[in-house]
Image 1 (tube, rainbow, N blue to C red):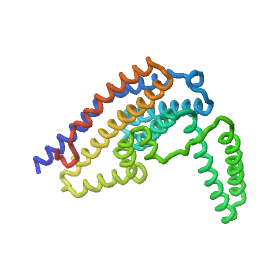
Image 2: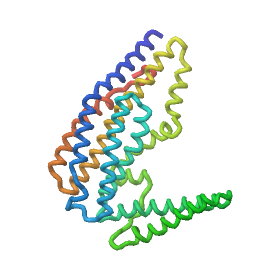
Image 3: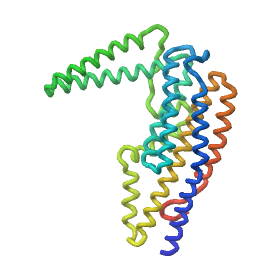
Image 4: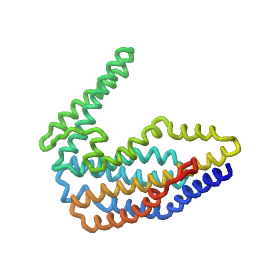
Length: 286
């Protein structure tokens, strides 16, 4: 038993050592933000369609906000929040990369088309439910939403110059950006943890199976593993955000920004290698 406890404490030390990456990661986070804020997509000559300018601008600002929020939560040891933000932020970078890969503006049009169609379906269901339950005020609001979506179809989707490519499901978007592995190993695998908290609950429940005299150290191990994973998530998000930035800088022929992004990616890969080369778990076994 003493050897087991010693192994668990060694595991804790391994996980906690990853928190020493925080100063570097904060520096790299600021570097990433500067790269994303360096490009004025509203004025750039390489972007020909308003629909693209709007979406590129939105995804740039959304990515910057996630970058700031993830690091803030990480610094404040809010590791559950890091895990939750990471999954949404990861999909944001994939969506951005998918849009950047369009030939003209067909994917930008497809995103709007998908939103309008889905919102129209929701409005109809809302209206139907409100009528069935006798909530006439709610039914009126639903009808107004339905009308605005029909108008949006005519205004944005059918307008001249706006092409449409059907917006694919999440896995297909990861696949088309060449990052299907990220879907399987990161996005899909974190679903239970995000939606139900099942992974955390499972790990905490497993601790209760140990003798009472070592449950405290096992709880420390669970917390340390969660902290380490949060650092890894922050690194991985930044790398995906840089992948999107590199695709954008390449498309817009921004050589200096591309070189800076590639330099930062190299530094982040070095940080991530530390996580991927260790093989410890809360059981204390290698």
